[in-house]
Amino acid sequence: MHLSGVYRSNALSYIELTMQEISKPFTRSIPRPRYRPKAHPQPPDVKRLKVTQQLMPRLKPIKLEPAEKELPDSLVEGISMPDIPAVSGLNIADWGSGDLMGEYSTPGSYLEMVRFRIERCKKYPQIARVRNIEGCVTIRFVITPEGGVRGVEVAKRSGNKALDQAALKAVKDAAPFPKPPDHLFKRGVPLELTIVFELT
Image (tube, rainbow, N blue to C red; front, side):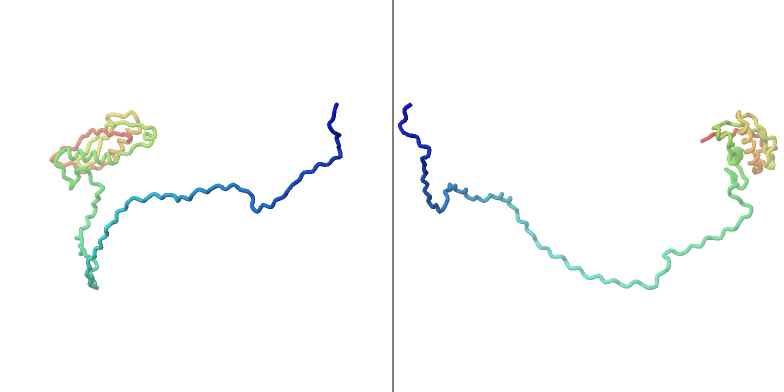
């Protein structure tokens, strides 16, 4: 192998550096964009209102007159009620239909009064009410010329003993009746009356 020179391992090599003072570092100059203000939207045209000043009319002051000191206590005069004479032995609750001064123009008006008084004395038996029992009872009796009753009996039963007894009791409790008019009835008034017991 042929070498052109002798290799020296101890030989030193040098790099020469030169320092130069630079006042400012090198920078790239980039131009800034121009500042453009944002365009504001223009407001729509506003019509000017024409305001006219109106003069208010002057009001005359109102003069209040002092109220009279002495006024009547009430604007309505008191009305005195007429004196009603007291009638002894008069009970309005005892009046029946057509029972006015004991006068009846027809037999029907008297019999209607009798039915009204019996219906008022009718009482529904509690045992029948609890069991929802209904029925009709026909009672036969005679109204005497003095207004009493006799011969009270059941002509047609209802099928329930409690209802039959209640119908008999209603007729007896309604007596005595007003005296039958002599010009309408002769020798008493025989009747057959049907009493209805119905739950509502």
